Length: 466
Image (cartoon, rainbow, N blue to C red; front, side):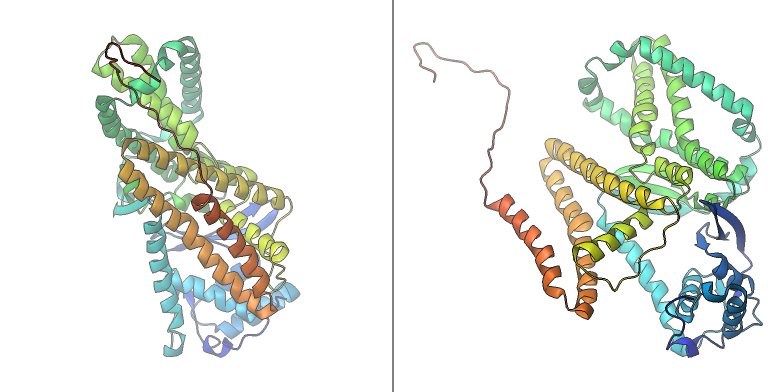
């Protein structure tokens, strides 16, 4: 039985008669040999994972049984493993805030509604804190994918896979043979003003094909797509679709296929562009083919295919390791370790860990955090080298949004726990001393400074140069 068997707020929910909305669907999954249930909201595509005990309570929500009766039913079935009253209240709050619960809520439980509003505001603030990622939803494309899936369906067959593999293999061999011609003076060729303008036009088109591949893969196995829009990635407009409904698919291979569909489409498009680039004479069409190769090949493997960034490669790795919510759970586990072993706070409850998850959660969190900071730093330095003022603004925005504000929030949460255990001094010392040391290093220790510039020097006659 959970530690919070009884709750002082139980009287507020005990007599409610909840039921699950009709647009939800429940499927059974297995992660690392353990049974879980995924509840899919078909109207939004959002999915939520629950334990078997929570699923038992959800399955009995028919609008006739009270919450008190639901809790006692779970207790009879699961005994000591049944959720406590506090966990049941948390389950109801989660379902209600997700708009998946139907019941008459009395006035004294309005905190549930306020919690939903706070969650929406927090999501909006999190979007604004990132200077590299803004998402603007526009339309519901589910009807479009339903009407156009028929001619695309054969691409997801074994014959389609064989054609894709043969095309990629041939393109790889040709790329090896023409590698020197492709990479000679590549930086100067890519970052000319005219080519950057072409990249700005081509990149959204290539990513549009990428997102269509995700959508058709979801629709292939009966999923739904209810959100399509534009996201600004480092101020570059890129189309996107919400394919999160694929998380309710029981088959792990189907979920991985959805994640890999976009990468596969871009690599196939890059292979076709390579064939054209080899065959064409120098000119605008050949330059466009080269840019498609660059976007669909290099950027796809370095970003979308990289599991350390939360793009397609991350979701493929999460399904491959059989660890859902890999990034969130890894961050929670690292936070628990720091709270317990660094600050000495023993009040917090350890997160749930399935067999074999401990190593992957810790390793992934450390590697992905370092890599993200490296990528963001490289982007800021690159932008600053071209547009100094914009680069400085991005650096300040990124520092406050991705480092300072999250650190302050976590510190306040840890201090609230430390107050209960009388260890505020230790927490403040371990938190403030590294920050003060960093400020002293940045502002008081003199750093060598040098700049390099190119030019022509004319030396007058009879002059002396030192």
